Amino acid sequence: MGSTLRREGYLILYSSWEIREVPLPSSVSRVEARELLTELAEYGRWELVRTRIYPNGVKRMWVKKRIQKVERT
Image (cartoon, rainbow, N blue to C red):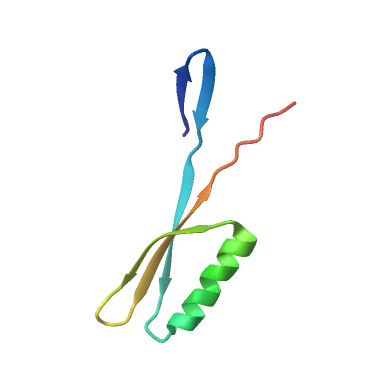
């Protein structure tokens, strides 16, 4: 769902974001996690939002991607 804002006769659209959680087990190293995030960014256009590393070594990362709505012509 996107929100809209009208300002001085112009219509400004704020598009929505899709957020995805990427859980990784403790056996995955930081180098491997970085490679995974690099691939997501290059090929899927995902951006890193947050990273959390728990005391037991489990890593959780949240990534976001802008949702592009296509209109029929």
